Every structure is written in structure tokens, then in C-alpha cells.
Length: 129
Image (cartoon, helix red, strand yellow):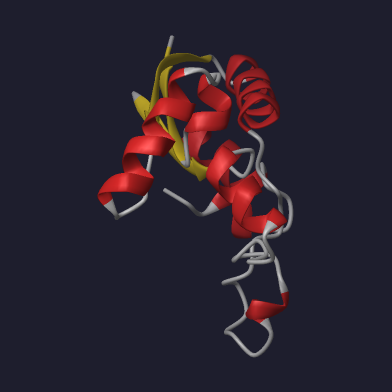
């Protein structure tokens, strides 16, 4: 969960997991296509795990990849298929603002947006065929 985006290759650890697993592999990733992240970036907050905020932090905390749901899902599904696994389930996680009025406005906006813009994180569950 939330590891692949910190690795140099993005896929090597996933490939190792598929080879070692006899049944399931779960992958959790951030979705940096998220509408809330995009909005925060536009108003100057930066991308927390990619920006200069990471200067001076321990090696490995910085994300090496800017994760976009559709591309990550395609890459991981292609690799899984080659290793005799199939995508069994996708779970989406949406974080709402903490204040009531911001949360209400955000929920209204989310109602009209596609899932890849709504979710902050996602989890892919692969099952051995």
C-alpha cells in the first residue's frame, strides 16, 4: 500500500509480488489526478510529495512518479495478465474537506465529475487465475 510510487522502476516490486503470491496481490496508490489536489496546486500549495517541501526529508519519502489512475491501472493490469493474474476489484477512496460548508460544496461538485477526478487514492486487487 502506497509503496510503488516511491520506487525507481514503479513495476519491479509489483512483479516480485506477483511471482511470490499464490492467490492475491493488493496495490494501493495515490491518485494525483484528483480534483482537490489539482485545485490545491493551482492556489499555490504544490504537490506535497513532489515539491520543494521534500527538501531535507529522508530519502524514499518523495514520490518518484506522478500517479494517474487510468495509466497506472493499465500498466499494472498488463503486467498482471502476463503473470497469470487478473484484476478482481478496484476500490476508490475520497477525502472530503473538514469543514461542513467546504465539504458540502465539494460533494456537490463531485457529483458531476468522473471517478478518476473524485478519488484521492485507489486500491487494485489482483487474483491469480
